[in-house]
Structures are given as structure tokens and as C-alpha cells.
Image (tube, rainbow, N blue to C red; front, side):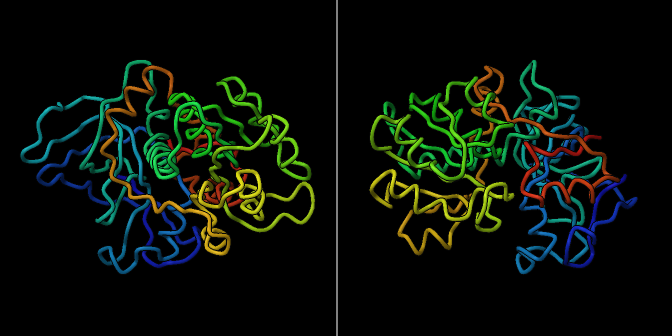
Length: 317
């Protein structure tokens, strides 16, 4: 099969497309013919050496989340059959992972009718991160939540989940995502100078809680710079009046300095069936920006690392 691998750590330039043996499912695992693989910033971190001391020796693969068709069953697997459409996390402890023609999975859920493989593969990490962040922040129905960086994949899902839970949402996002966020029920304002005043005006007073989902990547010194993340937490603390009512999924250094909360996401994936149900009902979705083939991985990585992908980037087979 064809698979993306790297045999040394570094930038995404070290990733190569190779012909390798297809993996065999172990006990409790299934093998899928991959139809789509979601790309995440975590992929580039792993290629650069993250978890290097906790995974087997090189070479390794990349791609944490996949959707595809069940191709083989490991010992003891029940409740799923060859040919079923499933999605979930790819196993990451062998020489290949999700970015391959075949991948192994130890946890999965069926893809609902009406949901494509691409749409399903975009869900696991964003949904798990957003759900845990809202739980850790302690958001309650009827409260007013500010989601900063709502144009990111995690931000969009956090908005959707908060609205589903009966929370009023104000979202900060760039112009390319504003209309879509308004369309699902959020009040939206832009980044930049005057953001705090605009949010206060929309809120009609103080914000109850704030969730920072903007990707890190540098401070904003002038309008038009790439990332909205830098310097956001002081404003969020001001808007809520209490650092304990602010949580970030990315800007850990600023949170430590200000006393804001952070969430260390544990990817348990025990809610996959619930996420599948919500996707089938139209509650849960992730905007897909662009599809790539396996041999376009370097182009995909470049756009991902620009911090402005405009949505989820997918590898499609």
C-alpha cells in the first residue's frame, strides 16, 4: 500500500510517500480502507519529535483521524462487519498511521447516513477537544460564552456544542467565517482594535465565560497579521472579570502568567457514537477548506502551518 512516513525528525519536508506492507489488525482492532484522513497541527509536532520517547522507533506514519470502509477484523471484534463505513482515531504505534491506503483502528463509530467520509474524518479531534474544553470551563445553559478564534476548527465545533447545550454565544472570527457562524446562531464580531468594546456591546454587559480556541503563532502588532491569538487572554480576562472564567486550549504560557485556566486534552474518544449521532442530526460539522492527495502532503503542510487554512485540511484517497 502507499503510505506517508518519516524516518527522521524535522519539518514536514522529511515526510515521504512510500510503498509499504499493509498493517494487520491485532486483537480488538479493525483495518479500514481509508477514504479520508484529517490533518492537524499535532501532525507536524509529531514529525518534529513530539512523543518521540513514547512511541516505537522510526519510521513512523502520520494522520490521527480517519474515515473509511472496514476491510479486516482482528480477533475478538464484534458489532462491526466488513464493508461498514466507520470513522475515528487511527492507531499511532506502528510504522504507518492514518495517512495511508489502509489504517488500523482500536476505536470507531459508524458514519451516519448523509455524512461523507471527509466530513466524518474531520470530526474526532476537534469534537473531543471542544467538548472537553466546554466541560472543563463549566459552561451552563443560559450563560453567555465568548468563543475567541471561532473560525478555527475547534472554535467552530465549540460554538456548535455550546449552542446545542443552550448557551448564548458571541464568537470572534475573521470575515471569511463570520457568515457561517452567524448562520448557526452565534453573534459574531471581528478581531483587532476595539474587540472588547464590540463584545461588551453585543453582550449588553459582562461575559460569563470565555474560551480561547485561536491557534498560537505570534503576537499581533498591527492589523492584518496572520494569527489572532497573541495577546488575547488579557482581553478575555477583562471581559469576564475573572481569570478563572477563561480557558485556553492553546496559549498555555499566557494562561500561566495571567492565572487563566487551560485544558490538557486527553483524547479518550469514548464519545464517538455521540458525535456520530450529532453529525447525523446536523448539530456537529467541521468546515473543510481543501482536499489533498497523499503526494500533496508538503503543500498541505505549508497551508496548515500558515495558521490560516480556512478550515479543515483533508487527505482524500
